[in-house]
Length: 440
Image 1: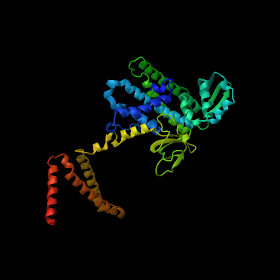
Image 2: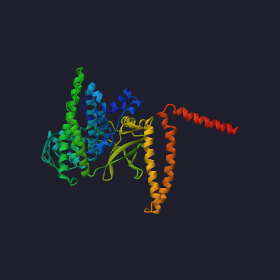
Image 3: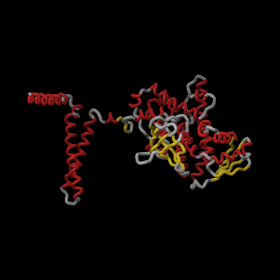
Image 4: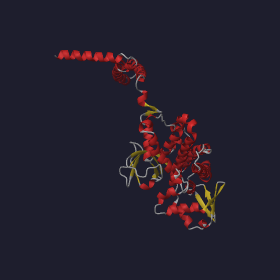
C-alpha cells in the first residue's frame, strides 16, 4: 500500500493496493483448493438498506468485508490486520459508488461556464446549498475544468479526489455565480426535498469527512511502519462502517430521484476493442458500449476479453458507466463461491451418510405426491384435464419412486452397513455368473 501511496495518499492508490492484495497476495497464502473449501457465503442479499442496489463489484467487496465474521479465531491473534482489510474493502466500495455517480452526473455546460467567469481568479470559492456553506480551494474546481477539457477526458478521473468528484455531482443542480460564491439550487429532476438535502449533505459533508478519516487512518499505519512498529487497531473503523451504511442508502435514493437506472448482467469483451457488449438476460437485447464507459481505475477491468458478471448505469437510455470487476477480484469470488450453497459445498451436503437422509426425505415427499395424485384421479369433483394430468404424473412419480428406492437399497445403505457393499457385489457376481452359464 505504501508503494502505491508513497508521494500522496489517493483513493485510486488505496484501490490499487487492495486489488494487488486480492489478486496476488491471497493466492500466495491460499491455494485454489483452500479458497473453494472456505465457507464463504453472500450476506449482501439479506442486508437491505440499498446494499442489493450496489454495483456488482461493490457487492463483492461488501461480501468480503462481511466475511470477517468467519474469522472469529483470528480476532484474538491479529485483530489489527482484520481491521485494516475490512477498512480497505469498505473504503473501496464507497469509491466505486462515488466514481460511478460522478461519471453519471458530469455537467459539461457548468464546467465550461467557469472558463468564462472570474470565479477561478480567487483563492477560495464559497459553495452555498440548502443551508450548508463550504469553503473550497479554487484548485479543486480548476481540476474539474482541466479534467473536462483534457484530451484524455474520461481517463483522468483517477486524478481527482473523492471530494472533487462530489463537487462535480453538485453541478447537475441549478448554479448561480456571484463573485467568489456558488449558490446551488434544487434542480427540477429532484422532486423530493429530503433527497435533495441528503444529496447536498453527502457531497459537502459526508464524503469529504469520509475521505479525510480514511487518509488519517492510513497515515497512522504508515507512521507505525516507518517507526518499525506494528500498527494498532483502527480507531475510526466504526465511523467508517456507519458512513458506509448511510452513503449506500443515500446514494440509492439520489440515483432514483435523478432517474439513473442500474442494471445487472454480463459483459462480453470478445469484440473489444472497440466495443463491449452487455446483456441483462436472454429476454433482453444486447447493448454495445464504448471504451469511455469504463471508469478505468483499480479494481475494475479496463481490457475485458471474456464474459464477466457486471453492472451498469443508464441515464436517458444511454450507458453512463460500466463497472466490470478486475480479473483478480472476479477470479477470487468465483473460487470462493464455486460449488457452495449458503457457504456449504453442495458436494459435501449430498455425500456419504447424508445421502440416505436426503433421499429418505425425497422418498417420503414423492410418496405423498403419488398418494395425492391417486386421490385426485378417483375424485369426481375435479375436471377431466386434472385427472389426465394426474394419470401422467402418476406414471412419472411411480418410475421415480422405484429408481429412488433402488438407489437407497443398493447404494445409500452401503455408507451405514459395512457388509452391504460385499453383499451387493456378491449378488452382482451371482447374476453375471448365471448369465455366462446360460450363454455357454
